[in-house]
Amino acid sequence: MNISGISVDMGSFSYRAIHKENQDNENFQDGQGSFGMGRGNSMMYGKNGNSNSRKELTFEIGFNPYSKKLGEYNKRQEFAIGFFYSGSDLANEHTEKFSSTVGDTFSFHQVLYQNDTMIRSRSEYRESANVLGVSAKYLFKTDPEKRFSLFTGIGLKLACTITSRVYKRNSEDTAVSINYYNAKPNYSLFDDANNIGTSDTWYRGKSEATVFTSVFAPFGVNMRLCKKKEIWNQMNIFMQGIVGLELESQIKGETHLNPFMGCSIGFKFDFK
Image (cartoon, rainbow, N blue to C red; front, side):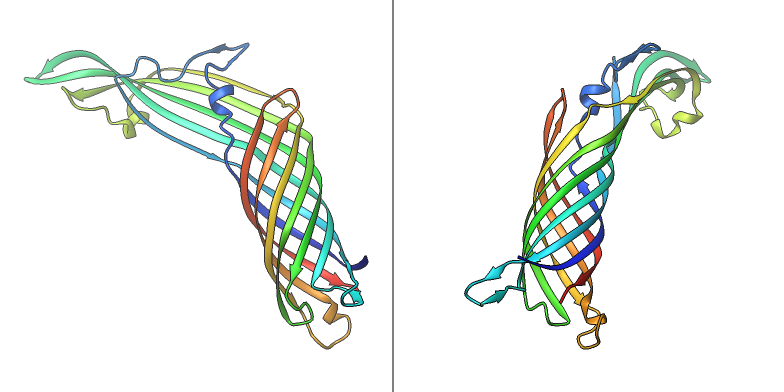
């Protein structure tokens, strides 16, 4: 093989959220106490959010394979070996739930009211890590000598965390609201109700080391800065999309299969 060039790119990738919150946060306990979520509800309104995104900085060296049929190195194919660093959100989830319990009924100026006890339960789970890894991919290209060219291929990644942190928090706010009889509590006015108590538990610490194994398909477009002038015709800007599957394995923990997708933009210098 012949060295074809070197490149560097920065990418952002979105992964399916890992629902660790259901396992790690429910009835979460530490030295400060514990509580469950959503107990004794007569009504419930909920919203939740989760995300799992990573940014990667990659450095690659490319090689053109020798073609006996062409009698020279095939510039339309490339084998690339890469090294990458990622500052990652392995998980970032939060939930917020409201519940209510019907209280006593009373009359004021011949209008019936009732005291409703409302509970707002919040749960948060964040796990972040610094990741180092290696990648290998095989690309097939249209004519790379043209100003614009396309490419696609298949690749593999292997990576592991070098540091990993976890943050867990559960909080529960209780308030009393006066409503017209048989009226549903207005949860949007929870902060204006009479707060009668708050409980809060949280934890920060290290999480288990994690190993990542991925298979992916890259595709994109390459733009040569100049076709004729020396040096400039060896410089390229490229945009790359990636879709793939990742096997995430925690040491002494669970294994998850995560689909992912993302894109990157980079600079490449071709060797003649």
